[in-house]
Length: 367
Image (cartoon, rainbow, N blue to C red; front, side):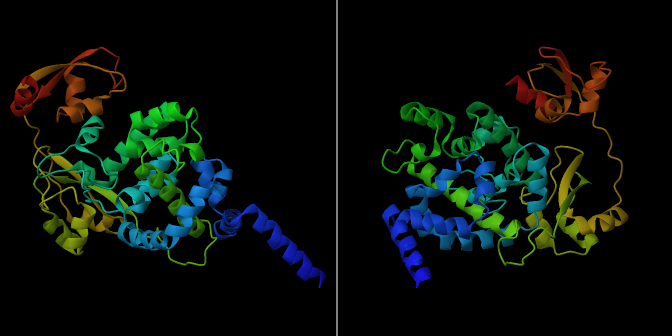
């Protein structure tokens, strides 16, 4: 009898706190991973009790669990590569869920606003972060290039705003939007910025950050062993290998005894299934278990060095390296080093370099 009375008193107490609080308490038990997720995104744990967040979870939990499973199946082969890049460059691997929100791990996803790829880069942002976009080659669809660019972008946003949830929100709506919202709200607290009545940031962004947090809670429940799901998401891993310009993926798939369609899916940036001829060597992505077969069967001739008939001058800016400069001019880093009599790859800001380039690049720069 005493147990029943204590139970009734507990129910009565929770009722006085409100239905939202009762639901939040159930969230603590349902998603023990929330403490880890919130910590990684710099979110105060009290946000679990936020009425707007509770309402979002109750309305979207079922659909997002389904979306999570579909996204995992689509991205299982590229996830290890993406997570490895995130961890290596100082960004929490939980930002993998930001890519999930953006594209559902579809490497060639295209939004109504013409954003493309795993991380949904717009053309202007792609250019700012050195992603090549041609008619037949789009690095926004390349797992490694696009993820590396997204990491740089997120790191820059974090330097500007100081908190990872603000970086995520700015990734969605832009730096100016978040800065104005903080100024208007006189705080950068997530509960205030995402308030559905004050509307300091656009509705899309308010939904975006809640979706990111909930997907991370769902995913980390599996990863941290709080779920009974036994699916192994990360068994498959990938590696990049060098191939000559003009190489057909159909030809490589035959050498590796794998389906051409699978190889094409791993290299969505190659629109017509053929490696471009802009550079002597290109990297393609293959399953790591095919690595030995590749090196045994793919005989890679030594490419003839192309004669660079023109020179352009370049003043070194902060953060630039020989590799980044070479990539910008479609040139060779070693050739730049030799042409400028550099003892190593160390560069000084405002140094002037001469860059050996082809006539095509020279004409493009001259314009």
